[in-house]
Length: 368
Ligand code: ADP
Image (cartoon, rainbow, N blue to C red; front, side, top):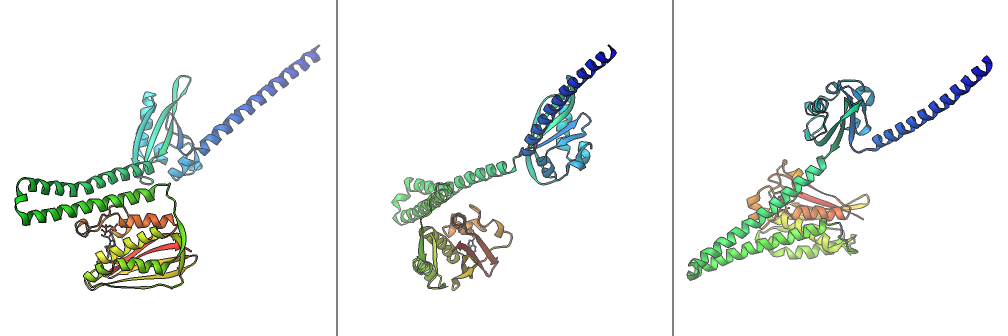
């Protein structure tokens, strides 16, 4: 009798043990699934308890704050992440039990912009902690700022010649038309501004076409020295006006495979600048260097050079060392950024070495 009861009890215990095992299994699977989700998230996730002690943090959070799991676990949040802005968000969530969403510009550990979403963790209807989801939006904000700056720059560039055109037309209408000599001068100025608008719009259209992903390069094999010769012919009279000596040393057999009209534009923009920003009786020299798997083309000039502080930004849209001088010389501030885009479309790179007052060497590479 006693034996039978004992046997039954053992059977019951075994069955309970099986149920427990199954439950533990299910919990483990659930745990693994959550861990896999957390590990693959691009957002940083940090969980803290009600005393702001760190319960867990996923790999993205570890890399954002440059800290390992072992160094962070069980520590007070502010000890590990000395950031008052995030700590404040956690305090708000723990006090109010409501979700807090905030954009924070952090300077530590790196200068970045984060979208922080913090929500309370409840246990038996009581706040037991806080879950932070941190999204790095630095790149998004940078692109937005770039777009905003671009629109502001374009509007400004278009407005300047338009304001002048309108001003001169009004002066003519108000009576200056009767003064033949002056009115011809005014019309010439209006014509110059209209040309400027035209150049600017053409450059903008070029840039937007090159930047669009749909662009298809028409690559052909062509003789590079022949192309340089053609481009240089077009600049002969411009160079003559300033008595600038143009020379080029290129291997006659140098053939490259690229979109000829686009490379012509690259050369045109670089040579145009080399003449524009040159001194009287200066020189422009074009030569090439063979590198492993690519050819490097250098356009060297004896011009004004570029101050070291401006060099890192010189290929940006609308970036100019001297705005007034560039405008006066008919520049739009877009030439070098067009050069950069075209060369990069060909999987090449661009660069400049320059000494203020002595001259510049603009170069680009094209894979062979
Ligand atoms: P821009 O139409 O103003 O010439 P670019 O994009 O071609 O526009 O050039 C940007 C700026 O870079 C110019 O305004 C000028 O300040 C500087 N720059 C470009 N090329 C040269 C050069 N060869 N020598 C000196 N400065 C140059």
